[in-house]
Length: 364
Image (cartoon, rainbow, N blue to C red; front, side, top):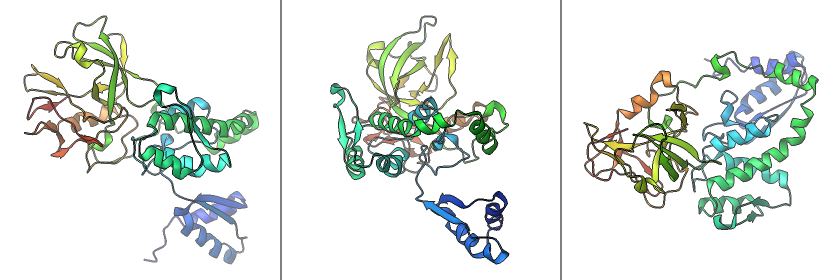
């Protein structure tokens, strides 16, 4: 074996075939670029210019990838698409590693701002406005939770849309729209969405977050259901329908911190679309159901997971693959009332998730 990837001769050949003067890529492409610089001239072709930038995490917390649309911002994304991607971005409170929004701030927004300060606009009751002269100050403020995920998301989204506005406007011409469609044809997949990459089925694929119930009322058309508005760290609260009306008093849920599954496919429940599911502990007969207790100090939007399963969750679980159902079968409480997955504790940065009284209980 020569140790040369079979892709290498093809990629440099693209430079000649396409007639380009330069190629841009991440530092992970440096070996291919050096291969091109060495061998293209030996074949009688001109040497091209190569630009590289640092590898940064995508919005989902993993590597930014062209095959995963929600991991990146395209230059011609309209404001609505940018806002949607930013709102869905992986952004745990205080977590400054694998944080795509902080990486965007460091490598895109601060260079774009130049001498101007990075500004966060907030209502006085939420801490008031704040500004940061350099990235390290912003990073430290996020690490110490002086600013929260929603603060960062709103600011980053605003700056990105500001930066992209002239590009998006330029690409409204017929010629550039045609060029864009030829360069990036829409994949012919069902629903127009790229398939999720294959990966093991475990709890890392489930987006479980801390939520705070900010409003709750009985479902108008179902005696056993509540309709809740829950803050899960996004721009707007989610509407969630739960079947807790026969088990938990309304006043106990109002204002409570809860565990919410956020990447299930939205479902209509008696005429109202539910955008998530509350996780609860239940006995075998389903006669006793308890809302899980979230560690004090946890923040809405913070991810709940195990120390051994930290990969970014799926954008949306495919209901046909029964991923959540398979994970759910290994969720239970131990003798100490702690919620576990395959024996591993589920927790936030503030501590473990507990059931009030049920041991060896199923989590549903």
